[in-house]
Image (cartoon, rainbow, N blue to C red; front, side, top):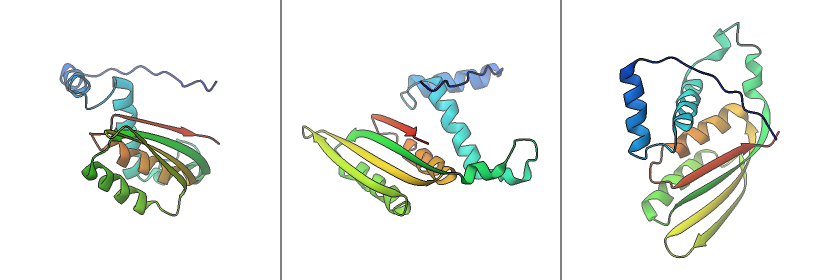
Length: 141
């Protein structure tokens, strides 16, 4: 099993309240997911090549295989948002399966092959769809 490092941070009361509100209003499943998503969004906007101390910036260009599982309401507006994202990354999505669970829920399985940076970008975009019930992703290599 892959060990995920745990870090502790200090924040002021205003930030703590903001995080708690986002989690309590079901914007995020938990505090860890909120912080990970925020960091992924930051990584997609910051030019890490200008940072000398973070190691090899080429590691972000590393080619990976990953999978994503999306569980969402079977709603045309949500499906349109997902299709728009899929079309942006069509060159990287090598497999897609959809399963309908009753008439109210859709489960989508995506297999991704491409660089880590684009995988992070697609994860952030999918996470930004607030109506999605559950979203999980895994980098295989």
